[in-house]
Amino acid sequence: VATDSTTTQMQIVNVSNPASLSIVASVATGNSQKGVSVAVNNSGTRAYLVTGYSAGVKDFFVIDTSSKSGTLSPIGAGYSTGGMVPKGVALATGNRAIIVGTGGSSQYVVLSVDNELAPTTCATLAITNGAYDVATVLKSNGYAYSYIVTGDTNAELKMILGGDGGQHSSSGTFVSSAFDAGYATSFNRLSYTAAVPVNTTLQFQVAVANAVSGACTGASYTYLGPDGTTGTYFTTAGPVPVRTSGSYVNPGRCFKYKAYFTSSDPSQTPVLYDATVSYSP
Image 1 (cartoon, rainbow, N blue to C red):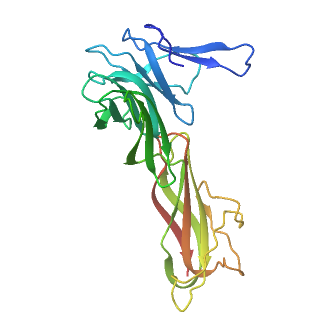
Image 2 (image 1 turned 45 degrees about the horizontal axis):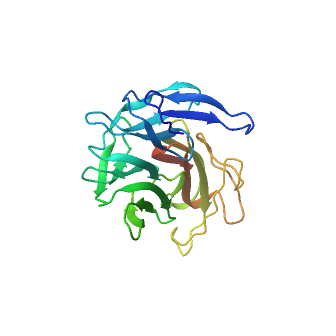
Image 3 (image 1 turned 60 degrees about the vertical axis):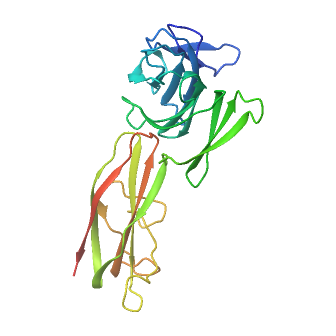
C-alpha cells in the first residue's frame, strides 16, 4: 500500500490472517513527499510507486519486492514527472508503466521500465482537466488499453489504446527448420549453447521422421523427450531417443527440435544461441 507519509511512502502488509494484519516491510523514497499510489507486477517481485510532486525531486520509483521483509529501497534514483502531480499508476505490460495526474504539460505519461535504473518516457498525452486514476487491460493480441478517470464534466471515463507495447510473455516456443540428412541415419545426441538466467527455464524436445516424397517439408513430426515420451524434456545435452515405428522413427532422414522458453521475471529471458545434433552414417 502507498501511505500518507513523507518518510515511509509504501508498506507491505501480511494479510494471510485477516484478523491480525501486520506490516512486514516498508519503503522510504527519500524525497520527503507523501505516497500516492502503487502498482505491483504479476509475480509480486516489483512495485511501482508514485508520490506527491515537488520541483527538483523524483516522484516515480521502482522497488524490488522479491524479499517482502524489513526496509526496502528503490532501484536507482527514480523518475521525475516534471510538473505533473501524480494521482495514479498502473502497469500496462511487463515493461510499461502509466502515470496519471494533474498539472504540468502532460497528465498521462507512459514510461519504459526496461532499464529499471533509469526509466524513460515512451509517450505523453495532455488531459485538460487532469486524470485521477488509471487501470489497464492487456488483450491476447498484445494491445494494451488504459481506462482513466478524468476531471471532465462529461465523459469522465476515457479509454486509450496504447498499441503493442512489447509486452512481457511468460512463455514461448521455437521450432527449428528441418535438417535433411539426405538418407536414413541414426541421430545420436542433442547439445546446445544457451544462457538461462534465474527465474527462467529452457527445455527441448526432438523429432525424427522419414521423408515424404523425397523431402522433409511434408514429414509428420512428433516431439519427444529424453525417455522417448511426449511428456518429458531435455534440460541438458543428451542422447536422442531411438524408435523404429510410428510418427517418430530414429533412424530416420529428417530431424527437428522444439525449444520451450519460460520466464517469471519481465527483466529476464533465456537465450538459445545454437543447437547441434550428431548422427551416424
